[in-house]
Amino acid sequence: MDSDANEVLIFDDSVSDRPLRIRNNKRFLILGVCCFGIVFVIGAAVSRTQDVFVRNADVDNYKRADSDILNKSDTLVFVTYGQSNADCCGQPGYTVKYPSHVFQYFNGDVYAMKEPMLGAVCRGGCLWSRVGDMLASHFAFTRSIVFSSAAVPGFPIRWLLPSTAAGQYFTETLSQLPTAIVLFQQGETDALYHTSPGEYSAMLTNVSKSVSYGRFLVGVGTRCNFIHTAPDIANVQRQFSNGPDLDMLGNAFRAPDMCHFSYSGLDKAAALWTSAIVKYLKNVTPKQSL
Image 1: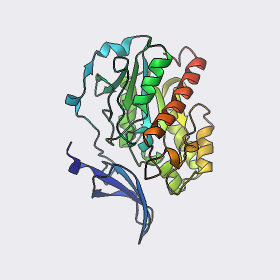
Image 2: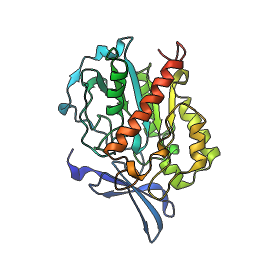
Image 3: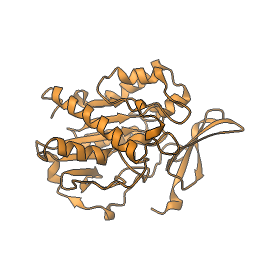
Image 4: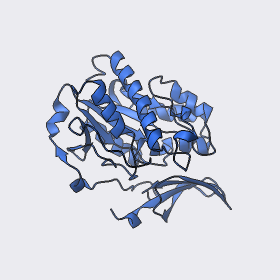
């Protein structure tokens, strides 16, 4: 996709509860103040109506793998969901170490893992390529690791509910990958919006109920630029007690926008997610580990 086809999502609570649409090639979040109030800009490709967001579908630049990998009992399958830090909006440059063990699923096919992921909206660096390498190494290369990207940068949780366009993409992906474990990383936009903890909890529970057998891991994530943390929302996320706390990664681990992760920040965040996944897998029931 040509760079001039990229768009940027703008949130301005004083103008509208929907994103405004402009052309821009920047991949990273910019925070600023305009005459209308706080403007929240995230590199993404999303339309005014939420119904269209452009995902990476450039399959010709990716090496296709055998889809039978999905049917093997030792394969771990993950669907990643949430907003930009669950997408590929970090600092780019990572090369997958174990492409014969780490894969990605997109539109019915399996491909070797490579950044940016297929299905991603941003075209930068990802957590999940690193997590895949770490898991492959942890399991001594006895298991294949597959990820499918369903996140949408900049979206508050209400735009990720199963009834929304993003939610329908997510649930359709889950229907194609019935054994998948969901890795949910989101919260920065709701911190900006001051979503109440009660509302956030109800919507997060709604999203989690679309996942079979409780295979739903929630990372803590509310830090972005001048919003160092949003404790009420972070505490809701912590109640799931199964994902990493990425709010602990301060500006030293962030890109210049102080929201998305730098190269070293992606390494650190991936290590935290890997530890959480390994811990989860040690305690799952037979149905959860299907």
